[in-house]
Length: 124
Image (cartoon, rainbow, N blue to C red; front, top):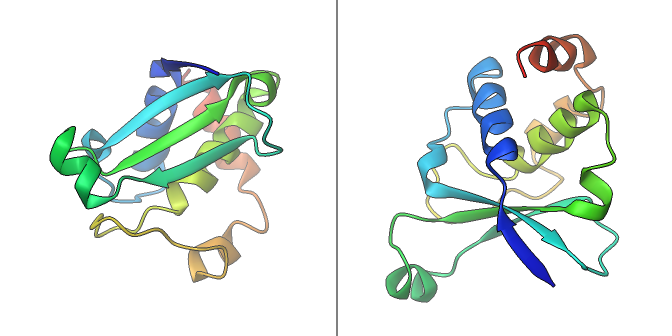
């Protein structure tokens, strides 16, 4: 597998964070793009265990990984929705945990906010 930083995803996440008032400190999140993964996922959110944060960087709590073969083929609105979904896994407190799909925030995402996502894509 190959990895690279995904600044385009970071910029999209910053716009989404502001537009949807998620209240996340995205300086604590690293965005990466992977190639060659066998996963069925389009993207995934990972939390760094405290031992890894101690060794690598105490400021980085989360990694959002997009799978290049799947994510890059999506339309802008679909990329924005996937990015919003992954950001929703991160709790507002940002203390190292992750929200699962049964959290109330995910119930709001069952009906994708297409109007807002199209508006976001106009700014990219």
